[in-house]
Image (cartoon, helix red, strand yellow):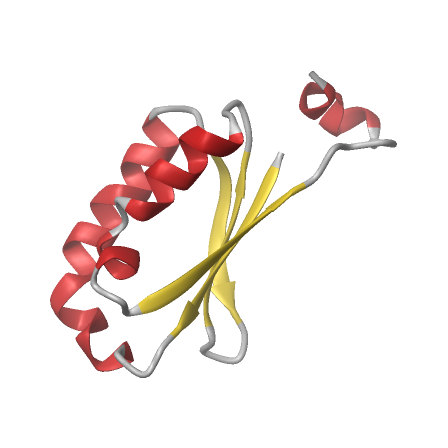
Length: 95
């Protein structure tokens, strides 16, 4: 499982120009079964993603395809978590 943070850079003003591509990238992440959750980092710091069902190498490539990342609107950090204990509702993450 991966936690991805997308923190705004000094190039944040370009976000509006790239929003359609960013939203399409998010939709693609859900359509591929990679994303479990996408949301905003508060207060207005960028975004956060919970991803699974992928490898480190694959998520790095996919995150790099986000127009916000490729155009320097955000900096991406990918944290890999190996679940040690899960609520029964999240058992599917143990695989």
